[in-house]
Image (tube, rainbow, N blue to C red; front, side):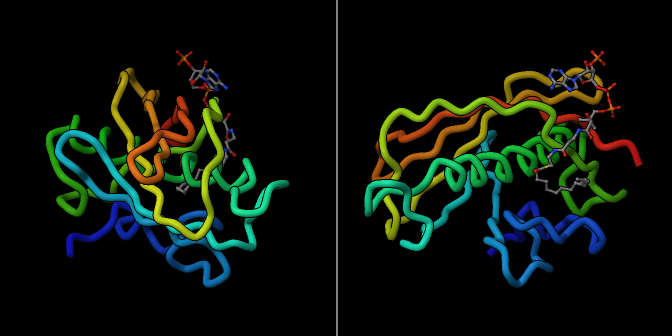
Length: 152
Ligand SMILES: CCCCCCCCCCCCCC(=O)SCCNC(=O)CCNC(=O)[C@H](O)C(C)(C)COP(=O)(O)OP(=O)(O)OC[C@H]1O[C@@H](n2cnc3c(N)ncnc32)[C@H](O)[C@@H]1OP(=O)(O)O
């Protein structure tokens, strides 16, 4: 299988609770290209239940959208520079400056969900990404992110 976008993050930036491959206690979300968009798949464990059993709590939904969004921003920026992840220099890294989430309907636990990302705009260090989390083909939450390229 193709390497995930997060697998290209340098070691020192791979400790994120949501998507760091070096965080054994975290979710280790993996995001991939799907055509011109990005996709991640994840099954939320029942322990992340919200107030209603069977439904995920909102922070978990936001966390998945957040980590997929920053990975997508890095991939979109890389491709816009004319190369793919893993080619040439280290990929640029992005952090979330702003994230809005619309919770449209409950997100189930124990079932695979998909998180997709679409490039909205790219302007200097700023990348805007439209995000959606769906279960069984039904969109449960939408997000919009402003990711800013990290100044090291
Ligand atoms: C945590 C560090 C990790 C680093 C590695 C990541 C690896 C990946 C790991 C996975 C990560 C998982 C994901 C996570 O959880 S990432 C963790 C959650 N996010 C953070 O902790 C980020 C905290 N914020 C910052 O560090 C700074 O504010 C950043 C770096 C974002 C910008 O500060 P910086 O001094 O660098 O730049 P700037 O202030 O000149 O702004 C630049 C431009 O952006 C515009 N702007 C800024 N904010 C907003 C806003 N809220 N709404 C609208 N616009 C905003 C601003 O007007 C300007 O526009 P323009 O005037 O140029 O047109």
